[in-house]
Image 1: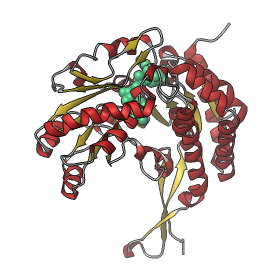
Image 2: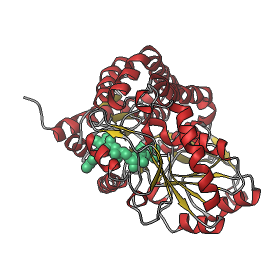
Image 3: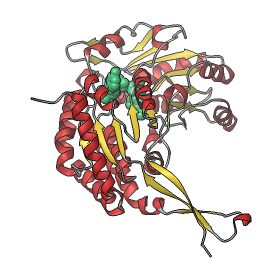
Image 4: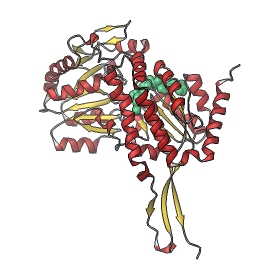
Length: 439
Ligand code: NAD
């Protein structure tokens, strides 16, 4: 008979902890070896993963490679290139009253890390944090999202074929399995998903004083300044918003702009959508589908929150919702109350920059703030007067692809960050060392 989930989880964590205690995972050779193995998994089974992502989210192969498979490969390559250098101890000056001595910091692995991933980029958001945790020399339990079942099953099958099974385990399942895992003591938990579950994760972690990284979401605004080239703005906004049918944590959630620009932007956005997906979006192989009926019903209820400029069509059987732009949307409209997380782009009119800044600051701190402006003063004011996980001028989503930038939120959009060397920081303890000679 199968053991209940909590007993299985306890046994699993004990086994991984025993491996960690042997010291195996700490050597640079083991770390880079695991990263090479993960890279091999992705290159040798890219098509299989792309097929799973298509089954779960209607993701095209182009999108699957660009935003998940190749994305993680790039992250791995960047880490492999720099890890040795990042791990070098950093000297600290010693004050004269201590006399002759040396001081430095070194990165210590934490132990056993838990990574909990969501369904929207189910491969990337599981494997990129796992790569970081392995680079930092930890053992890892990885929990894919049950709402992307094909990708979850593929990862559960492939990961043990490639990575060290004494140190890395994939646990599939939903709430009961995750709850059982959260009862165990981990040395760090990285959770990606929504704030409600983020609070559950943090409360569970608090029982063991386990540090957490919470990668959450929220409504990421896009400010469009007067006098910008609206065809370029529309093309970039549409590409960022409608990728993965809008189910991207850093998707521009809504547009803030003045009335005149709003009118011109409406037409430009309609044209941009057609350029991206052709006149019949439902027939475009490049356009994704909504993950499940619950989200489909939630989203279709938002479609009349404003005047439809383009889109509005939907089909429940195929979970298709057309890329939809809504104009003259009131801040009180249903679509403006919560993160949309779907292919609906509301345009909210403001008088100008001052009102836009107030609008942003009146709400929770977003994961990303986007702005299209040619004005240096506007850039400086947005940088100085607002707070967000990331601030991006001119190209939504692109900051995520830069491994040298930390990726994470602030306030309601999360805490902590990862990617590149920030993953090493997150999954290590920076130990202070002082050595004074005895004579
Ligand atoms: P989800 O429903 O797949 O949940 C995420 C994970 O939490 C899953 O592994 C799930 O099994 C687990 N979970 C769900 N309920 C739980 C519970 N009661 N106890 C313990 N674990 C539980 O994904 P989601 O939350 O719908 O994801 C969408 C949200 O994630 C959006 O808000 C989005 O903005 C955010 N997001 C953030 C990032 C980021 O990097 N900051 C990336 C993607 C998505």
